[in-house]
Each structure stands twice: as structure tokens, then as C-alpha cells.
Image 1: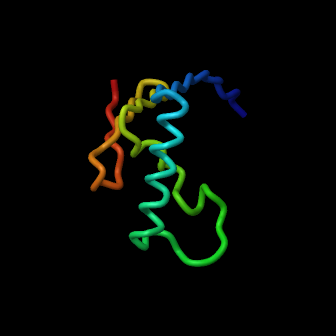
Image 2: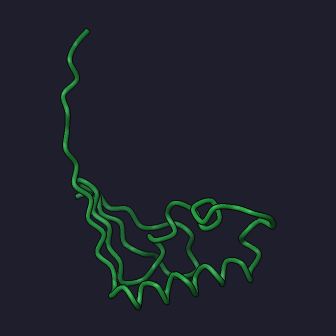
Length: 84
């Protein structure tokens, strides 16, 4: 069995100030509930808003290895992904 090489990958999330980020994410979460994008009943936050929720917040940038995500306009559910 060949030994697999390990690779380190750095991830960086650059966001607004903590207060602005909290306000924007709270508003975005409430908007999802009010527009019916959230199923009825109990759910954990990650299941309710999704694992890529933070990627839709403006003034945010995520770098993971050689890939970079930037937010899309509010009417888009998919973040923009660029490979450097």
C-alpha cells in the first residue's frame, strides 16, 4: 500500500466587523424564514440556513487553498468561486 502524501491547506475568512456581520446574518436569516425558504419544524441552524450561508453575505471573502469565494448579489443563492 502506497503512503499518501499529506497536504496542508489554509482557510481564511475575511468579514466585516463582528457587529456588522451579526446584523447582516441575522437579517438574512429572518428574510429566509419570511420568504418561506426554511422548512417548518425544528432544525439546527446549519441545516436551516445551509453550510454556505456565510458566502452570501456582502463584504466577505473566503480563501481555501488556491480557491477564492466572493459573495453574489442578494437574489443569487450560489456564491462565486474562482480558482487562482
